[in-house]
Length: 156
Image (tube, rainbow, N blue to C red):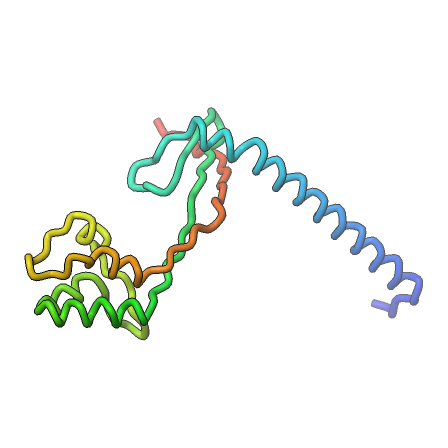
C-alpha cells in the first residue's frame, strides 16, 4: 500500500464525516419515530408478558415490540441508620436482616418491599416502619426502552 496524498486523506475524511452526519440524522429520525409512533402504540395496546411486570408487549405477524421500564434504587445510609436504630429500640433488630442485606453497601433484600407492604411483623415494631423503610430508598424511573425483534418462526 502506498502512502495517500493529502488530497486523498481530505477526501476520505470528508466522506467519513458526511456518513457520520447521515447516520446521526437517520438515528434522530428513528428515535423520533420510536417515541412518536411505536412507544404510544405499545403503551395503549400492549399486554404485560408473563413474568415481566415492568414490560408491555405488542405482536404483529413478523415482529414483536417490547417496551420495558427501568428503575434504579439508591440506598440512603442515613435512612438505614434511623431504621436500624428504631428496630433495635423496639427490640426487632432481626427484622432489619429481612429488609436489607449488606454487601459492600446495603441492598434491598429479596421480598423486602412485599414484607413492608403486607406488614407481617411483631406488634412491638415501630408504627412508622413503612416511612422509615421508604426513607432509605431513592427510586428513580429511567426512560423506557423499546425492543423490536423479528419473531422466530414456530417449528411444527
